[in-house]
Length: 311
Image 1 (cartoon, rainbow, N blue to C red):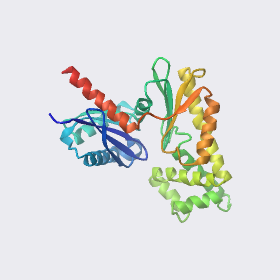
Image 2: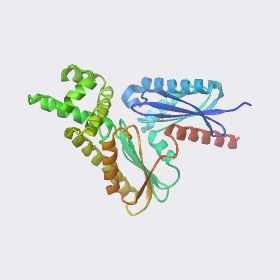
Image 3: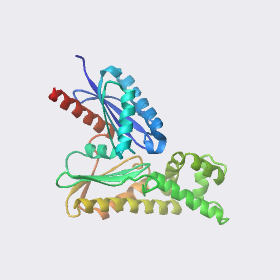
């Protein structure tokens, strides 16, 4: 038999990453595509993104579908059992004959953090915090989606910025520098045009406002800084809630910031760091040991090894 491979996927509201790993645990290639959260882009859109990322990884690694043994996809929006079953069935149709496992992006973050006590704060299009206590039990807080949560996320910051601009417009106020910048950077003629785009596809508008806000904040815009300060407080609150659930208030643990909102703004990174240090003075800040896509691939490899041992 030739070399066998596995595919690991990390999919969220902005992008999908795929890691192609061989049976010796080496990442051979990767692939990238658009969003694959089925709660945001639908199940068809999610599958299209997963398949595109997988095809790219296999092409880059010069591997065919027949050489893939196991697929593990960790997708945002897959927390509900019914969603997991549907995604697993759809993936099974796209990759017939392969073993398919579906989990959430939350599972991948803890896997990528290693086996020690840890809290991972994920900040991107959506937000959540996930952690592991002294006994190894995993707990998640947040991550309930844009309608019921995701406070402090890129989506939430963009939504709040636009609400503030619309309220000012309703009062007859002249557009603030931040509001004018939002219209310019999103190539909108006026707020009515941008509202129509929000009603059609909010995920294509609100997260795109986040870098506009951070850019303005780095240049000293007070309105932008107020929005980011409120977001940082919400995110620190998630960590505090999780510390209490895990009884880690007086314990040392690894605290990791992960997601597309990190490294985008000097002001926001420093502000969030200050809030987190105040909320978790015992925490040791660090990085994930691997990407979430690689973590998914390692889970797939574990499934393959377990199946081999059972034969």
